[in-house]
Image (tube, rainbow, N blue to C red; front, side, top):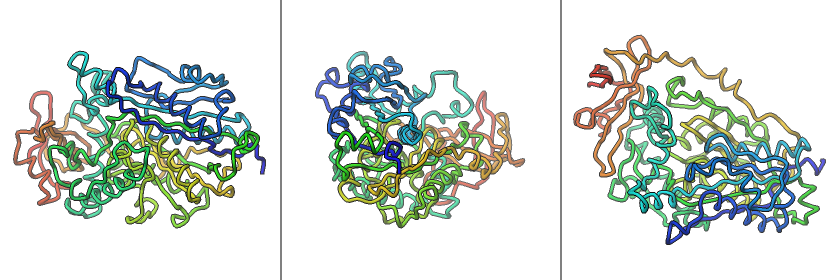
Length: 497
């Protein structure tokens, strides 16, 4: 074993910023710097001036900051040869950056790397609200980031932000599994209640009050419906100010620096695969081939079975993701799916949650030993990247291997149906969701339908169409598979029962 080419995590740092005055709070760059300094302290100090690489997760809270990788290095007094920022803030970014850094060490290209990210959406929204009547809605921030160009077909029908799209998977999966609405919601609520218990014990979590499954299920002023069937307590909480970072180094560098063996976390192999970027060009919405390939390949590359994984972080922006992930690998329903507390309670800092997961996993493995699985998901159920961390040196990456399993996923995926933007006539519901106002009233719905010829189409449901809204949401009958009619009204296609 060449210690110069064995990648390990030597330090981790997390920060929550809760300023009484938002104008005194840290911006995203400030959060990254604070987390990086905490990681340096955790690693014994003196690492920041020895970094060969600084890589950061893109942020949306303060878009005027631009690429913050070099400014971050300058703030830290670092002089790395490599500085980079991800192209966009995907939830899979931190695991990808971790895998890239580990591979670079295995290749002998670098000796130490910093990976950092931060989002201050809460502070940004509060500043905007205080300044000029700006909105403090975190979901609107993600919508703005998604609509900086002319709206495309899906966006014209309301499928703009992730919170609009993931329910399509939830409803399609429920129908495919033969679950009733009540059964599917109970599964979601039980998972989320369990995550709130983990968050309550995690000092780095944003919300630390346990929430019962009954509270998660019941709509209330504090748990309003967002996009059917999700309520506020089932979706990622991006109204946070959080930063996280970790320092990756070669085993030899860690030993030279005096890091004790019991604090070292070994990085294993990872695997990644994506779904088509255009959600309407995916084969189906009740599963994700790319997710399954990422997870299964990661276990195979590390010669691990589910029973040998002591801890897992299954990405939890919305319930459909960990539901799909655990079924892909046979993760038991009664085992915890997070070491952080999930994106609702641990906090959902847009693309940087998995940096917190990596930091929390490292701490968990230091405290009790064992092996952990990190699964990250990003975009609109688009990017999937998994990796293994362990306190066991035998689980370490020993050679650089490609983590790109896109070709395998593409080969396994069925052909996508054609899209017919102009279709009118009889159709069947493939999946759907309903959007709500902040007061909890139905605002509109969207049906993803299939024409009699099998083409995929979108149709709007008016928020005033009480009969259609009730049919889609009351659970009396399964809407997926039900037939209706796509009717053109002006520039839009409307769904009629």
